[in-house]
Figure 1: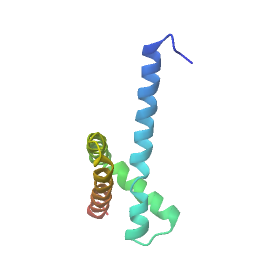
Figure 2: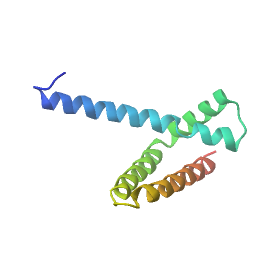
Figure 3: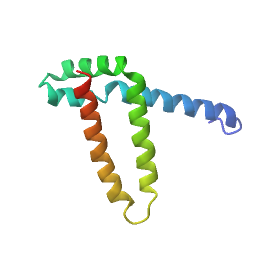
Figure 4: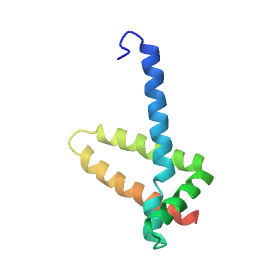
Length: 103
């Protein structure tokens, strides 16, 4: 599309990644509140959104930390995928603890 303009393409890509990270951060806690507080779907989305909005910097830091760890772990030949699975489990536990601590 903009192959002749690498700076514009880089800016567009960075903007899309930032918007995706914003979307993920704002709605990642919803599933935890669905389970933790036995809420209806819409109520859990609202609760997760409000908690993420109040604790946005910490949540972004947590998500970025696990993204970096997962990327590095998957670079390990042969066992990287298996270790990535365990990192995913630890990330789920960390997000659940984050949600519990910010109820």
